[in-house]
Length: 351
Image (cartoon, rainbow, N blue to C red; front, side, top):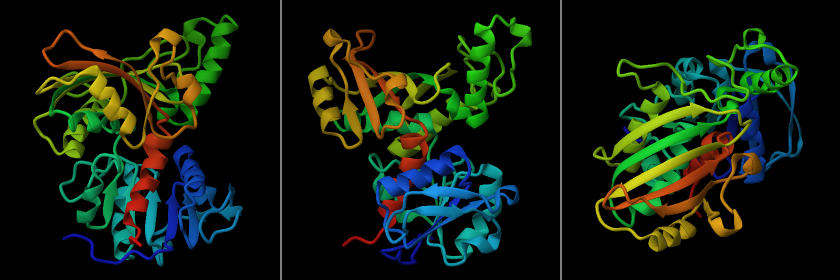
């Protein structure tokens, strides 16, 4: 049953997992978008309770420190929107309490993404899907978000029949410990430490000066769960079960921002010129595409930015109606926190 509770114009917002990388980014995005909150609650585990998080303010909430509260089922009383980035197990454990309190959970984990009663939303692609939520809206996988944001304006030119994507995913996609490991390993490697003495905890292998074609666990067909997510989530978000998607996901020694090499096959001819015009007009997309001047998106230069960046747009001559392009986005911003707060904006009453 679709949600019928009316969202107030100045909602109370809870940030669940506030001390994590995405949780802290939630707070920055709430400020950056000046989300019209009447109150912001920072929630985390018991061990983080009492910590103070700097907050620049938004809506009716002034700048200052937020004191972290232990997250319990009672934490959501009086909350209207709960932004979750505390892991699948916590989201599942707290779902009933959040919904019973009358709040809408916007969940960044994979816990509910493929549930039939849970919309999976990228606001630039399928904003109307928020209308049928029943208390939970899922934030898609970071690598899926930036890809479908770029696919949507192209799909509007001609139906997409097939997508082949190879990802170049930043260490921070595996969390703060993974970023520290990249720093530490790089230092150790440059100091001459042999491979068997490098600190390897966050990844399956050394990440410094290496690429690891393994993100999440392997499935029975030898694809990884990360690759599976891109396949099934793309179909759900785009509303087209017939899109064929082939994904290879690779972890690379970049701190922040995922890159993706994407080849698209269409039902009908789409020219490079038409595709460029559609992308330039699309919300949330920035075209950086001037090869003669060496202009194209690069992860190392786009950390902290919003939206998705597209370059290297060209014809793919290996199929009848094909285009190829390169796509970069900050996976902590658009791939997580920004997308979730944009979903929250969609829930606000229209003036």
